[in-house]
Length: 408
Image (cartoon, rainbow, N blue to C red; front, side, top):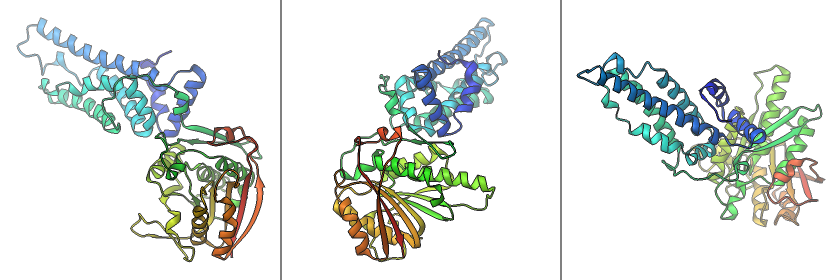
């Protein structure tokens, strides 16, 4: 069933945040097998047609009454009409979708919303002599232009949108020891990987495994003032940790105790996607910063963000990392990064697929020893969760290794 103007109250409530929109998109496909855009664009078409039709009817009445002027009369008032108010509400919903969910914004354009909006943008507001009428039309056009400016290409041609399920953010669910459900939404980068530097575009198995371990061992986060995810990629581990920290804070009823969560990567596309995922999960204790492994030297008491005005960044209490080693040189750089970014007395928890699946992991233990000051213990780790199958490159029976690193 398509949406009508009777659904506007519901829609306005459901587009308050990127997370709300993601939940709605998931629910629509699960319940009805239909995407948001397929239900919304007909509503947009309906209200734009109703608005234009109301203008034509008002103009016709003015002609029939043999008015000398077709504008600036009470009969031809625009700003007071139900049609104008309804169109404004629908456009505001569209603006929220366009600004808070780039993937949905594209789907709406491909479904035909850009063609409809183009008609509205081309409407000549100078036709109305009355200032309030001109302002009403221009306000509608401003909303349409906000949507247009949110699109990387406007107007998009109408085209079928396939694989809607694959375009949704992944919904990774975990249950803790008290059966509390934790959901993390992960938007992967939709552009194609073209180089080794693009590994952060997708979710990897070790991130799921480390996240499950955090659910089972949440005390590792306690008493940490600052936590950093190294080579965060899509950010699953850090985002889940942020949720757990906020939960711990609520349980203690102590709003004054805050922990800074920093998600780091070096690829600018990945960093942009990390920011999107932070907003998607509504974790206000979390930031994304650039940390390039190869900018760290392994002999400093700070880490370097080469894009920041103040490049020296404070060391943290806890480092989390998953699948951040893809070649031997990464093992060297990762060990250097852990040394520089971790406080003395701090801990790093690193999970990687073993050497059968990731080049360079076999070197990591020796590189940590080379740096000095890092005491490392290793153990195998498994993740008994269906979410492992959502990760790229997952193989049944995959061997994963956890490195627990203390800085002394």
